[in-house]
Length: 148
Image: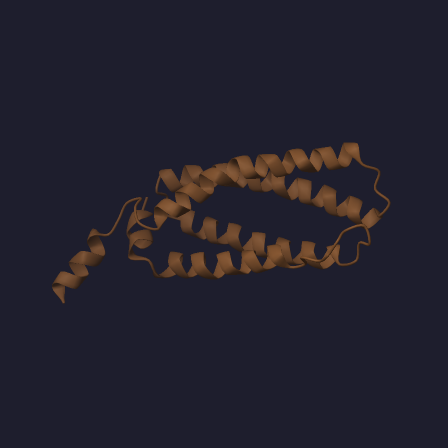
């Protein structure tokens, strides 16, 4: 019994599945920057017939700027191994899930958008939220790493 407790305490540091979290946070930076650039191009390059689509594009642009800034903050928390990282990361997953669902629902009402792949973003956000939130709550490595 004591050996098992010792093994649980020894699992700490950025390794294992936390490496995937680090890679995801780092790769999210150029991905979000690209999404912001696409949003800016959409605003200045196209004439939008649908007022709803215009607001969706503006909303998504603002959201992506916020996500980019929040992602930079999360990277600091992650590499500084701050305790608040886990709650902040779960908040990011949750807000991304909510936004994906709202966006997919709103796009159903825009005639200019092909909704053949509706709710793909929402489904991937649900999957990411379920997997990573369970990992963050159950992992000994996460619990032992973010202690500052």
